[in-house]
Structures are given as structure tokens and as C-alpha cells.
Image (cartoon, rainbow, N blue to C red):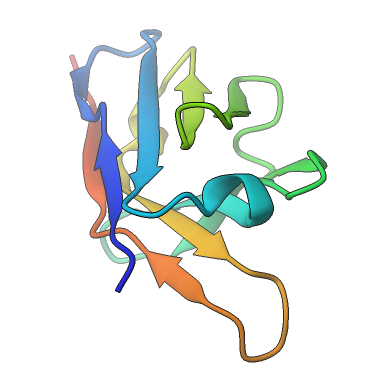
Length: 118
């Protein structure tokens, strides 16, 4: 079973920046669609950003212009650079790796807490 390893979360002040990292125990990130999702308390999980195996990137409305998703195939890692953070960005951030085909793999990380507060 592939495991996803998220890191980089924590507490940051409003206006600050954080970079989240997602790694996998198998080298599948370069051939998968990889996404970051987040869930705030009492709210449904929402899309933050995705990067396809071809490199196509999509951002959720809340991330557009402030966040950047990138992939390092050599390191088998995907990053989410977050800037100009606000308290509304607080939540648990999840990494998702999707093979993109019916019946293919679809893995989720355990989630990492991001708290934006002064």
C-alpha cells in the first residue's frame, strides 16, 4: 500500500507563508494527478490545487493568485507554496494522488494542520 507523507504545516501569522510537501513511498507522483485539498472545521473538503501528470495545473478559487503547486520528479515530491495566508486558510490539508483512470489507484494522505492566527 502506497503511503503519502505530508509535511510543512504549522502555525503562521496572517500574511505569512508556508510550503507544504507531499511525498510517496513509491515513485508514482510523476505519472499521477496530484492534488492538495483542505478541510476547515465544520466545512466540506475543498480543492486547493491540482497538477496533472502532463503538468496541467488547476487552482481552487481560494488559492488563485496566492498559492503555487509544483512537482519535483527527481525527488518524487509535490509542493504547495502558500503566501499571503489569512485565517480563512486554516484547516487540515490533504495530499491526493490519483492515477486518473477508472479502477486506478487513488491515495490520500493523513492530512496536516495549517493554522493561520496572530
